[in-house]
Image (cartoon, rainbow, N blue to C red; front, side, top):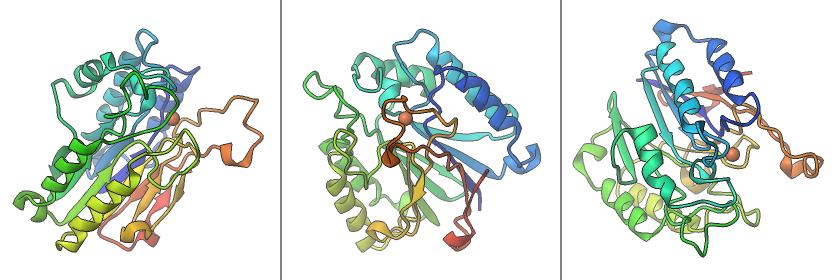
Length: 267
Ligand SMILES: [Fe+2]
């Protein structure tokens, strides 16, 4: 069974984040041969500001470098900064994100089955790009995406998998004003219904608040992880004093074949 390397919130384009990311990849304690045994999941905010020309290209350089290091399975979902400035998104970036990072038109949730494990990616900005709610840093999956997610768990090929991993950008347990996943309760209902129908949800992975941390056991899901900010994007000085704005990198190695106590954060 493949292991998971969970990263998030690279914010490439912010100061020297790209160079930091390349260095982090270089220094991963996983050699090239071992790397093929991993699936890398990056839960959004690949770039710091989608409006900044060349940001996607820089992020793609980072993803290409991961592949060069032997990590051939790299899965991503977009975050609020991938669709705009972070506090103001725009629909024009939907097509741009798909072209840049997927190379084709896609409909969320995405499904990748790798070594009999199902990886289901959600776009938590899907319903957050209308003119009336494209402000602040909230997320919303939307009714249609949640319906499609429910349908995915009914499919034989998903039910036949040994594990199921759901990943998204916004933090489903974060109630801080203006940072919430607005339809978190609805997501919980869909995942609970899937579990009640006899399939496991083995991990729920996310980022967004840059704080890292583990919430294992929430919603009866054994692994719920926030990867923090892999490149340690700093908060502005005016707010960094507040404990709830502390930042952390929680790049984590997750081995679903073992007990969660064996998962660990790379220093
Ligand atoms: Fe972020």
